[in-house]
Image (cartoon, rainbow, N blue to C red; front, side, top):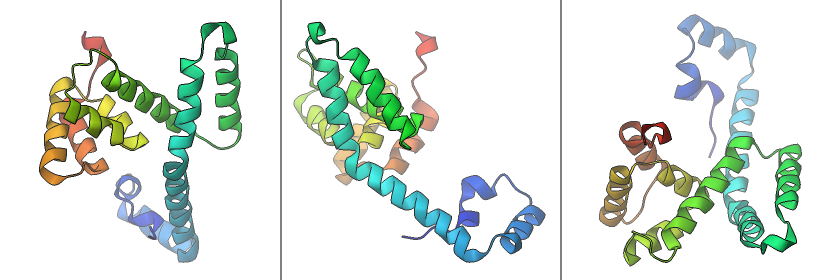
Amino acid sequence: MTVELLSIDYLNGQLSEKALSYLATAIPEHHRVGVGQFVVAQRKLFNQHAGDLAAVLMALEQGPAELNLAQFEIAFIEWLRENGVSSSRITQLKGAIRIKRRALAEGSFYDSREREIIKGLEVEKAYLFGRLTWEGQQQALQIHQSKGQLTLQDLRQLLKAHQYDPKSK
């Protein structure tokens, strides 16, 4: 999959036609496509290994208190940042772990079908699912049930209307 940098709505929506025209002539097409390919490859690589990163973070969180793994976790996260993993990706990992742990916990208010759906969500989807209000989560689960899957686009659309705000408690 290739993405041309200036065709990305989020970016080109910030610019006038004149500015877009300038950038189209100032940045050769192969570089605009190259940037898009890099972003796509980076996202794909993260998605392929997010489960590995999440497994390490879960093991650190669930370790016995006497092992004092919190310091290792801090050092591990800092090492990830120094090696190019963005803070937002680390936040996604932690958010995905939190929603999955909540869904799978004994006494969870999710039924067994819902637990299986949540357990199977990829990291980015689980993170977005966890940012939804209860009503938004129920709508997401209904979408999954009707379509057999839940896309990032579905979740982002739901977030527009049902984003959880911790300040509203």
